[in-house]
Image 1 (cartoon, rainbow, N blue to C red):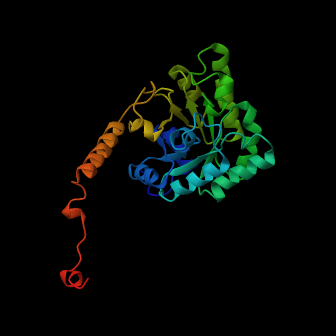
Image 2 (spheres, rainbow, N blue to C red):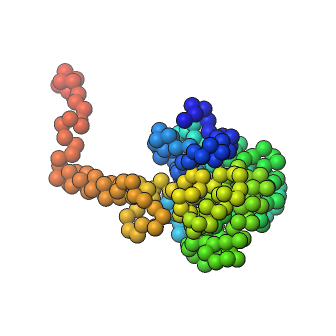
Image 3 (cartoon, rainbow, N blue to C red):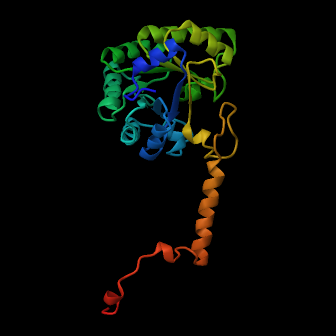
Length: 277
């Protein structure tokens, strides 16, 4: 493990050497600092903060100001891991000038080291411009949540021949445009393996099987913070949903019964001061 900041060079060398890349999400200082202490290589401040933190039903309502606010919080908790900031819906679609400005904000104001944007061949011109400005870009194909209304929901992508061939072509186009890595989301493991083998930049899988160059999950998912239905591609490494609820219920019960705060949680005045009151 390098003692310095993880860079795009780390990503290239990891794929070349066959070392798996680890990524997780974070949206605030505390979680970022915990993820950093765990030794994760890169942190994505995803527009998934819309679902995870802000309570939206999709990523669509997330704004640039939302992203900058959370990226700044995350970067305060990180010294080694690369911080990648998502470009939210419509932040790189209106004009080349607007796209460059927004990508620049993520680095200049947010303090991230790279940006991520969704799409394949249709976004390669934007990718080239952003990369030419000195801003590292991570691609994202397969399930692209910003296009969920267009693709008809959260489902596996590339299961049919035409769709699979398009994803392969998209990955190659993004590589040619200059991305340093590509997220593959909800892609059959066989297709993810083909893409990974046919391009030189690393792939980061989420619901894309074990043959990618690395893996990413939403941290709140792997910690089991939600409960309810677990996505097929998620593994719970903890069950914090129940642990947190039990802890909060214990607090409520103790407060209502007067057992908290106990003497050891209280502060006393000096007797000589108290006698004068």
